[in-house]
Image (cartoon, rainbow, N blue to C red; front, side, top):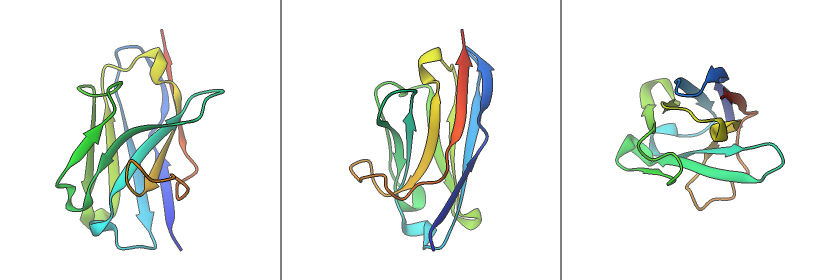
Length: 118
């Protein structure tokens, strides 16, 4: 079955950087669009970024554009999210999901906590 395992979260000061990873299995990764979403305390899921199969196209929400970079390694079946210039409002649980930015995000991992202190 589909499995998504995120890692790389942690506590960082504002202005710092983190790189999240999501290792996948159970589907043909190279052709799949992958999406990162996040959920801040008390809020719903928020779309962050998507990358198409083979990494041909990438998309970013306005809140992270210019600071975050999504990438993938198809040989390792892994998708990454490089996060720079982190802000306290980036604090959330980050999830990797299989599907596009317009999907329901139902197929996702357990998440990884990112906390940005001011």
